[in-house]
Image 1 (cartoon, one colour):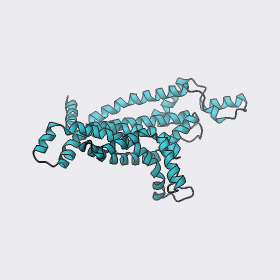
Image 2: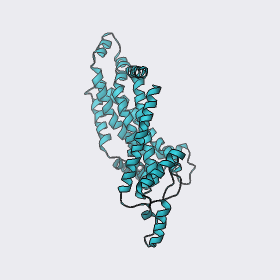
Image 3: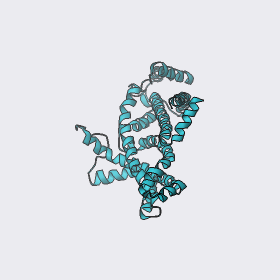
Image 4: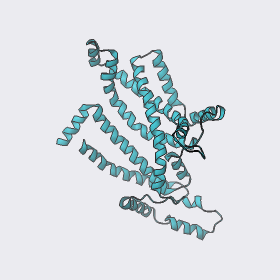
Length: 324
């Protein structure tokens, strides 16, 4: 397993390099540049040119990329924001915590809803519970995040005045745990509905494929209770395709966080990403894309490790490959 992880990490290096090259090319293809967003259009051309020289925008594109890559490899430096002049590493670090809190809460809550409901729906196929779970799954997938978010703000913030509509803490307040929790409820509900809606269908279909297997009929014939048949024998084999889906949830959640954080003014990575794109903040966008690529690769690696924990046959194949 250790050798496998090392090989995957070595493979990830050229992938990360390719991601940075593609991101750099796409940014340079987009119209506008940071100077257009910073300076007054009435400034003389000499002042604008001086600003371009200061930011290194007059260098050839390949030289700008090589300078960025050299600073990253040799010094671990992602540069400075072209808008706020703050270090990109500090900007991303300060926004990563709120995003991980939001995504982690939505992922845990969504799976806590999806897995039991999916298992019950499959074990009681064509029952009222099954129809209710499938209908709720389609609703969770079909309702756009921005629409559900705005509807929740209108209902719970504007009409009922039960929950805050934006931010992570109350302005001028202490910002304690309860304050953060209240601000977390609405955005987590939106993301959880989407996560649960997707995964209920996957868990249900995976369980349905397993429940008719011969070895489960044998377990029932031996007198095992249905609860043990489903949760001890069927569930472990059904988890194998489910693990693949869970590994894809993190990239999807990052994409959804961009919209949700903007709607609820949540001070996370998604809000920083959108503001950086609007301001053509090249260095911050490069750092954000690199961070997102690292998280996606890490999620895929953890998914592969989870396969070995769920299915012993995969663990044995790792051992055989290492010995050979």
